Image (cartoon, rainbow, N blue to C red; front, side, top):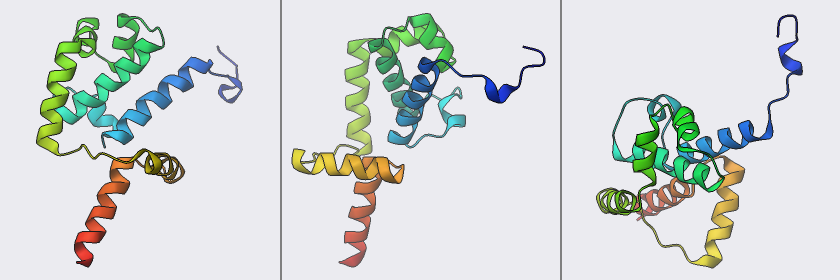
Length: 137
C-alpha cells in the first residue's frame, strides 16, 4: 500500500475483537504483553493464553489461526483446549494461588462495571479491598 496514508486504513472488526479478548485475559490474569507472548510456562501466563484460546475457539477460529495469534503451534492450542488438561491444571493453579473468591451474584455485576470503568480486573479490586481491610484492623 505504497503512498496510502496509514491513518486511513480501517482494521476489520475481528482484529479489534481479537485484541480486546487478549487484553481482557491479560488484565484478568495480571500478565503484561511481554509475558503473554514469551516462552514462559508459568501457570498464570498459561492460564491467560488458555482463556484466549477458548474464547477464540468459541468464535469459530481454527487451531492454526489461534496459534498464530498466540504465537504458538496449533498442537499447543489443541492442548490448551483439552478439557482434561484445562480442568486439572486450572484446579491446581487455583489451589496454589488462592485466586478463587466466591462473589454473591448481586455484587458481581457492580464489581464487573467497576472493573470496566477503572480498567482493572475484579481480582485486583477484591485484593485491594482485602488489603485495605487487613491494614485497617
